[in-house]
Length: 149
Length: 149
Length: 149
Length: 149
Image (cartoon, rainbow over all chains, first blue to last red; front, side, top):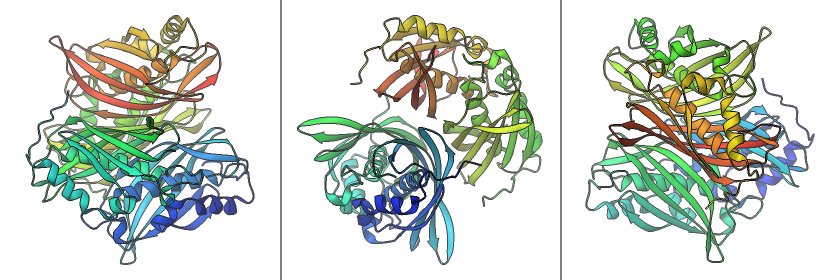
C-alpha cells in the first residue's frame, strides 16, 4: 500500500483552494465530494454543454476529471510549499458515459519524492447505480512553489 | 506513410457536422481550422473559464483537444456509415499553455480496418509564435453507425 | 466487477499451449504460476542475462511480462477459436526491480466483444516480500483465429 | 524543434558503455546502429528465441527496444554525471513484426531539466523495405549518478 501520510495537515483546505481558483472547474460545474489522504472524488452533473454528438458526456470532460482527480489525489500528500503538475496520463474509455452525473475517484498508487503515480476511475451515475466508464494511469510531479494540486 | 484516402468524398462536411453537434465544443469555443484527409486542426482562444490556477489553459482543455483532434483525423478517413470512438489516448504535457489560443493538430499514423492509430500535437500561440505544449498518441475505433467523428 | 466468465472451459490448457509456443518466454525463463478466469500470474527468476546496467531486472523484461500478463488474462476469457493481440499498453516504472525474481499479475478490467481492457502489476521478490515495481494499463483485441493468448 | 545540444561531448562512448553493460541487450542480440544528439537507432536480427506464437518478433522485444531507444536518445543529451531512468512509456502495436530484423529509432521530443519526453518508432525489415510495426511515447528522468542512459 502507498504511503498516504500528508505532509500538510491542512491538505483539504489547500486542495479546495487550488480547485476553487481553476476557472475550468467552474465552467464544467465540478464539485469536490471527498478529500482524504491520497484520495479524492469529484462529481459533475450532466448538462447539454458537456455532451458529445450522441448526447453522452464528452470524452474531454471525462479526461479532465481523470487528470484533475489524479492531481488532487497527489496534492493531498505534498508539503504546503509545493505544487503538483501533471506530467502525463493515459486514459481508457470503457463504456458510454450516459447518466445524470459522472464521478471521478483518484488515488495515489506510489508517492515519491519528485514523482507520484496515480490512478483514477470514472463512473457514470444512472438510476442509482455506478458504471465504470473510464480508467486512467497518470504521472504527477511536485515542484517548489506556493499553492498546489 | 499512412493511407490517407478518405472512404467518403464528403468527409469534410461530415466531420464538421459531427463537430457542430458536440455541446462541449461550443462550451470551449473550439473552431475547426483545417480538415484534410487524415489530418485536422482545431483552435480555441483563451478565456478565464478555461484556465487553471496559474492562469494558463487548463490541462483538461488540452486533453479534450488532443482527443478530439485524433478523433477528427480518424473521422476524415472512414466511410459515411461508420462512426469513430476513442478507445484510449496518452497525453504528455510539455510546457505551460499560456498564450492567446491553443491549436491542436491531429494526424492519422496508421489507418486500419477497425482501429486507427493517431497522434496529436498541441501548441500555444503567443506573440505570433507557436510553442509545443503537449503531445498525444491515441487509438481510435470505427464502428457501424450513422454520423461520425 | 468485470465479467469473468470464460467462453472456453479449457481456457487454462489453451493459454498454457500458446504460452509454450512463444520462444521469447523460454529465453526469459518465464513460468505461469496462476491461471484463473480473467487473471493470470507469471514469474521469472533473476539471471545476469536479464539485467540492466545497475544489475536490476531490465525494464524490457518487466514490460514483456506486463504485456504478456495482460494478454494472458484476456486470453482466459475468449472463445477457443479467437486469438488475442495487444493493441497498446502503458507502463509506469515505480521502483528498481532488484530481487531474486519478478512476478507479474494481470487482470481483466473490462471484457468487451472486440476489445478487452486489462491491468497488470509487477512485483519484485526479495527476502520473502513483494515490492510493486511497475504497473500497466493495456488494450487487448480479440480476432477470429485458431490458438490464442 | 527540441534542443539537441549534448551536455557531454563524449556522449557516444558513454551511451555505448552503458548499453554494453546491459545483460539483456546481449541476450536479445541488439546492436547500436546510430548515435546522434537526441537520436539513436538500434537493431536486432530475428531468432526463434525472440518470437511469439505466430513466429513474429515477440511484443516484449519490441517494447524493450522502444524503451531502450527512448532511454538512449535521452542519454545522448545529459551531463556525464547524470543517469537516465524510464518513468513510463506507452506503446502502440501497428503491424505484425515479421521480418529478418527490427530497428528502433528513438528521438527526443523535448529535453527538460529533470524530465525528457521521447518518442520511438519500431520498424521491421523485410525484403529490403521497412514497415512501421510500433510507435511509442515515453517520459524519461535524469538523476545525479555516474554512468548513464
